[in-house]
Image 1 (cartoon, rainbow, N blue to C red):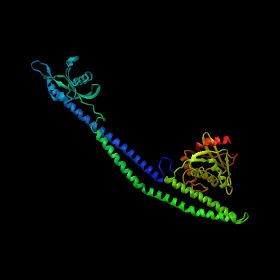
Image 2 (image 1 turned 60 degrees about the vertical axis):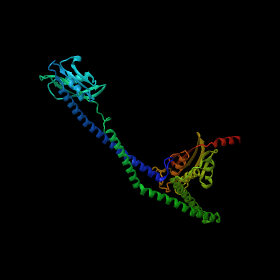
Image 3 (image 1 turned 90 degrees about the vertical axis):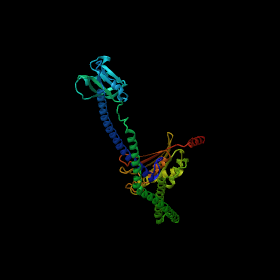
Image 4 (image 1 turned 30 degrees about the horizontal axis):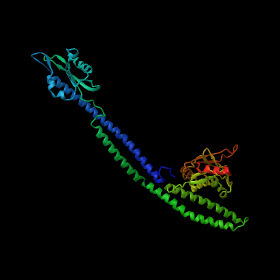
Length: 441
């Protein structure tokens, strides 16, 4: 039986399995695609940084070539840089004169690089006599950017200072030009793979879905076909029993035949209810149901059952489903609590407690088998059965917003533990009216 709100039947279970398979596959594929995109961005950014450093070194070399000494005045001129495209390239630039100090040490400044880091990088380059570029970092407006410093020379081949060229921007993974196309492509590929997985999983699970549907149709058809013959068999046995006397030896066999027919009817009812529950075509019609009255009927159906009822206990629910649930509990207790030919002592207690309706079924049989999940459908222990009784009870109780508890009870030192099944359901509004009526009487 399906849980409320999660779909109905085995088909819903296969749909959930198909969805989970698709989610698992899409998650794994998504992780792989994310790693691939990250690797692509890292590789692309690394290549861009290499290219950027090469461009910075080329710009610094060009700037050094545009610095010259004025033959008339003997001063160093940097107007060639100002008139060149370097001034409008967007890359901050600073020309340092190592013979000067303070403000005089700066011959030209474009783009506003922070002088402290720029001059420090320039001094590193001007400290030697090498034309090799020196790479470092210079802040511009509080942002650290890659920069390069290169030595420039006077006409007499003496080093005059250094040119510092700062990158127009800092390269990061987030501002890579490949980010948007790579992320968009990864999303498109992920959607395509998820769709393919959904289709393949659906095609792969289709035989299982058809087999489950065939099984449900077979169970429903078999239950319907068995109900009529079993009913006629019981009616015939009941009619023949009325024609026999108390001492007639045939009467015992007829009694046993009626009992077997009742048991078969109960099995057929469980199969029909389970099939309808699987297909979700059981509307729960809620009305006031007196559980005490429902339990009282059991004494007429099961002579070995003792019903303990103190007061009316009214809930809001489907009378047929609630009656089926309680009958299942008692039938399960009698069927599986039997030891040899000895019927168990079965007691049904109906009461109210803390705003809840409590129905408890107790017996002195061997209790629940420890190695069998009795709430799993078709789980059958050594005593036989269909494995539908308790799962149907759990489903009915859940449909009514209640709770089912299974356990054992002590029965004296060294005695059998017995089985205890407890149903808790919300009390209906009619309990207040019943209580007022009882008090007036």
